[in-house]
Amino acid sequence: MSDYPEKRNHLPNAPGVGYKPQHYSALFDDPGDVSWLEIHAENYMGEGGRPLAQLSRLSEKFAISAHGVGSSIGGEGALDLEHLARLKHLNDWLTPAAFSEHLAWSSHDGAYLNDLLPLPYTNATLSHVCDHVDQLQTAIGRQIMLENPSSYLAFSESTFSEADFLREVTSRTDCELLLDINNVFVSATNLGYNASEYIAEFPIERVGEIHLGGHSEDKDEHGNVLLIDSHSQPVVESVWDLLDYVLSISGPRPILIEWDNDVPEWQRLRAEASRATIALAQATP
Image (cartoon, rainbow, N blue to C red; front, side):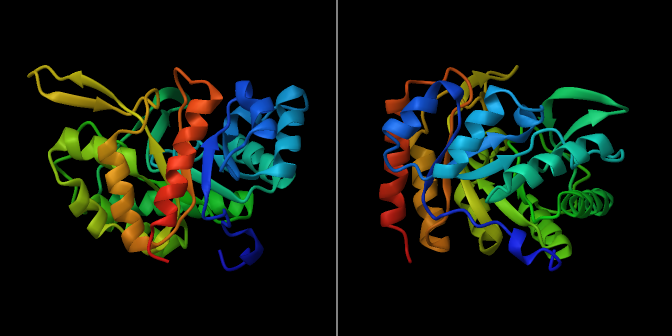
């Protein structure tokens, strides 16, 4: 990515929120501490219309982070060239402050699935994930961030820890990382490991963006607690505590509040962004 030094990620170390059209007017009238917005790239691949007109106006006031959900970086098959071309078109038009994707797969043999599915962390997986990250960065002409997944199972064939796997991907591709702290908490609860120990091993120096979100609680077939990364609830206290721990190591970083389902009124989302401001103010510089 040294060929694109002007297209590296450069979000402000401040709170952002996932943009929802019902909050469009409120973002201009009463943004509070919000200084950047995240959009899902696949929602803005059309030609013209109200969504692009609104996004264009928002981009004059807020930094924009484009978050891809459909590239299937972890899939064994080739990336969809038409999809990459649409992503390039969007990035060329929008020139976002950052672009991110998931460490997951969501397509197979031309079929697209509704879920972001986990990967075994092996040398074979590492090779094709790095190839796909390189291909995506080359296609859109900019550095990307790769997001750690929320997990509901672990693969017995994995030979890397998730943190070591992500560290190796960044080393080979010069991508950055998007650290989703709610995903860490969800995975740690579901798989029975310590979330703080995971954070201590994570390549924090490569983190260009942090996500906070809510989750739902269910039970598995054995009656054990199963957390679902639903983005439909407030951020829980344990995730706020993990944020404080991350920031004590990393210093200030861009922090996004995600709320994609059962979206609340603007004032509720604005209040969560304000709490992120307090956490940033207390972070080690």
